[in-house]
Image (tube, rainbow, N blue to C red; front, side):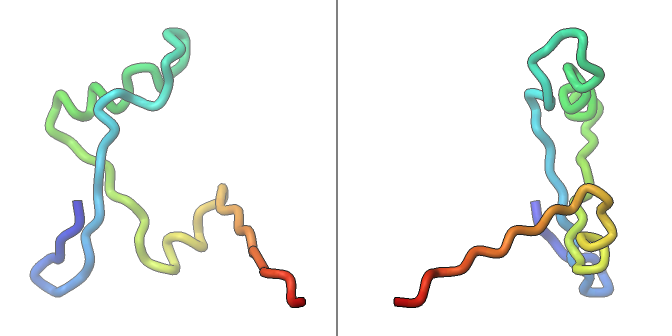
Length: 67
């Protein structure tokens, strides 16, 4: 879901209705399903600052060989 607030700022969110893990002993087994059942969504980081602040950020640079 993508929309804009009254100030024109981007609002991005979503949900996995089937949760993040299929393993019954995982803490993520029913996490998204529970959020979905409560009508809640996750706010996605969408600004450059939010993305760069993510401690799990990994970047990959692909280049095409020059012949």
